[in-house]
Length: 315
Image (cartoon, rainbow, N blue to C red):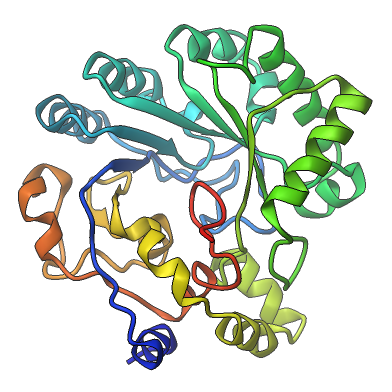
């Protein structure tokens, strides 16, 4: 029994699935950035990317089962040659599509038309902007990233993003080994400062707790903060977050087609419970709720404080 399961038992809270709502697709590890908090260890030098055969089989599954939401992530998912076909297939199948966008990709050569493609297909953009301060963003994501991100947001605003139906949501990650502040208050601050200083508007801010895996875990150990951070997560366990955890309604698929309970489990090579090499095209959604959810100590991050999911806080 891991520390997360101990907390579930202590509070007598069951972890179970609801209806399958979201298919989250990780198309690969390649990215134009190498952020310190990245749970994927994505970077420009990574080569692990989805093949054409895998992309075709995933599109066939989408056409057949038509999930409510298709959430595409990476790396920088737009780098994949299969990103646009996946978007087109999902939209044609009646799915709401989300692009996990790092904003700086909008300035990369070859991606000049990306924002118009996203708008044409009414893709919701969920964009990482870990702070409204250039100094703090530079610490997490590198020099010049904040300025590129601001220009990316202005480009999206310029074609209508930030208003229905072109949803533009931002993601905040804390700087260091701490929990995010209150989501509503941070959203108010973000909206006020970004509007005043840069004329930027957006719909919502999502606060997401840093996961103790990959690069962030390396930083915790290097700075001797690992034990303290895990203790913070454990002591901040909130049983009210459990019904809303994303693993209850989201099916995650990796760049090779294997399925996982979440993107974090994928990075830890923890495939969905029951089979070691189950692929999306072998999974009948009607059996999904019968499978138990696979957990680890890292799950404490999703249940700490106000909770953390791909759509922000939970309580």
